[in-house]
Length: 310
Length: 310
Image (cartoon, rainbow over all chains, first blue to last red):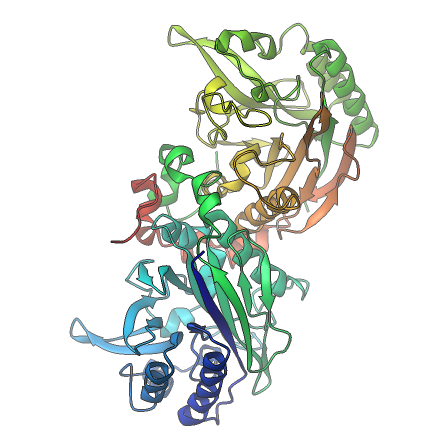
């Protein structure tokens, strides 16, 4: 048994009018609550620090700068790192990253893993950006991640942390089995994952319940097929009239949901995750060394789009 | 709308004492029933024609020859092809294939797709062979697929058939997202799949309900993530004291189970599958051309086993 007590910290909607300092106060309250409950790791959502701004169109991308962090930690987020170190609790945090690299400004949808000493031990930049890059004038709201972010350039790394092997992915990544498998091929034992998922699919009509069903199905399949814990935190509820699904969840390496949020607001869910629980699956059904057949998988890396037979 | 009425034909247990002719009679009865219900395609299970013989150890692999088909159709299976042509119903059939190729005897766990004209239009040989190759003296029964079969050498092809794009995979393949994705990358719209899944996991103790849960989860994730129908047929129930799970199911491209067997015996489940139902998902959330990032997936084909970080 290698037990880590983990919390998913769901964050209710954040208004455009809410300041960074106000949001950080909310996060600190959950961090304190988690520490009081004996947690070693707290998983915050994707783009935790502001409203989900890709729903708003700006011709000039620089107009989104107020939603980005120019440094991590920065002056407004330093209190999170201080609290982590003081309380001895690590955390995962999603945020919009603005960085000068290669002589230019680059923007990513990013997540970090912070140790119980308050130090950044891992960086991930979202690979599967959903949505679109141009304004959709007829849509009820926008989903402009392809406009505001570059595709993540760090792959899907994992880190030795919290007594095990920890990976990260973000929101739409969870729908892509490739993301899970790349972490699985590095022996991942716990995946931290934040999401902002609108209640409504703006691209085509579908039954409303499918949003939550597909969220759960993606977590459960990714967990089972790679025998890993998944700790998924939502930003949820109402953001200035736009609604996000909740459903923050902790999923065991068998794919079973062992804890799930019961509200759409700020809420902590906690579970004792035994990092050894996936070991039997990894040794038998999912012993990749004995069972995988990469020679039959060549299309997965050789082609991007689907090509139908003649 | 491109609707195909499809049946999954679940087959209850087959005893060692049951003859090929007796089994074919059972299959013919279900084929007739499906034709009467207006079906265009009937999906039979994996290794449909005999008991699940990989549970029995033989030092000499040739001792398993009675479970294999030396020709397809052969004298005992020709009636299925005749009935298909007479009724205008296509079928998918799993069987043990013994063939002389490359100057030697080769054995595969195989499935075929047969047109409503009674002609074979597709062959698939199981890639993900579960189990082991040597006797496990302490196990309650054996699972010797790695002893009795070669790994399939045909990849995961798809075929233009039944008005759409049809793929096949077999039993344990359903647990591997790579199998689904390779078909998804060929625009698959319906996957036919047979299985024989023992009720008991002989490799390690686990809660009994997980066998059915993992079966369903694998089908549902494969369907959703590739926006394809899945038609899955079990060989189920009792085989000389050894029990197989049932749970034959038809899963829509949204990942929802739309029909499921209610018995462990011979049973037909039927659904009108609109092959266009996955089109919206393929155009948006799962528009591979816009969203997939093969440069981040290199491990999937570059390595077989998991390699943990230092």
